[in-house]
Amino acid sequence: MSDSADNKALMTKAFDGLAKGDPSHFMPLFSDDIEWQVMGSSAWSKHAKGLEAVERDLVGPLFARFAGPYLTIPELILADGDRVVVLARGDAETVDGKRYDNDYCFIFTLRDGKIVGVREYMDTILADAALGT
Image (cartoon, rainbow, N blue to C red):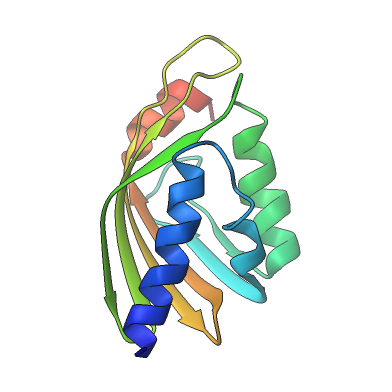
């Protein structure tokens, strides 16, 4: 398989799980030196470097806002070498009873089967309104 095919297969398996609320094939893909950028200028727009920062500053606060499982449903997965682009939509309810059904474009960079970079594009106004600032 090519790098593109291998990386697409990894991300497809990860997002198949995320569509069911199961991150068990996604989280292990994070490299210790992962760098995640949530693009935009809202309270949820962040730039975290390193696995600890990603878990502390992005994943932890985000999942603390959900009342139940957060589903990320892929609509399109494209791969080119070490980059995988995923268009997806979210499906969740917040602890405040608000719907959080955002649309995403993720650009993942993989190295040796691990995610080393993420650029995340989403509706940041919706994130602030539904998740708080």
